[in-house]
Length: 198
Image (tube, rainbow, N blue to C red; front, side, top):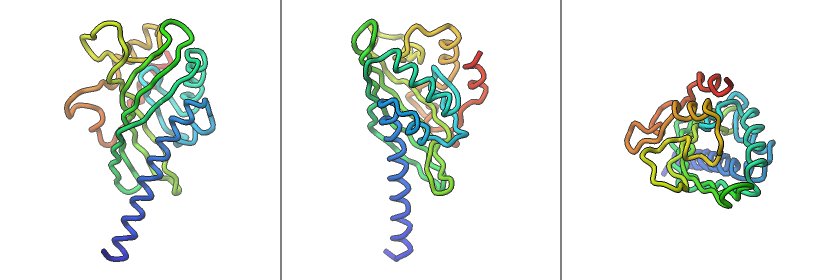
């Protein structure tokens, strides 16, 4: 291996580590309701399509902290398998997650699982999320579902019809190459930002 090859390998490993640390910081931030840390994992102009919410990092931080405070006594966002497709100063990642929440009402425990699909960009030497789509693959349900309806796989309950429609019209999980995880570049449909505010 030449010195140049070694430098390239070290630079790539550094990028991959910084991307992974960014993704892990998300879980810590949302579980500790740490708004500043949560905002640090996104670029300011990023868009997060969480299905039940679509908007900017500031709007998402306000929404998710309020929602978890009202809905749960405690919760964990555990992240597992993570693939990182690195291309210069852009990376596409797919990270499996499991959410567990101790509810304030109803059943004591809620569990759901899915994937965070992210496009990250390195700007001014800093990796952060520029686009995020949250997909739900399973949930703790009382009955066997006939479809993977995103509005039924969420820990957020008592959704208004407008949000149910938003979730059903957005990205859907698929067990083939039509799954949104294959999209390059990953991009949130900006019309969903406006739909989520109506």
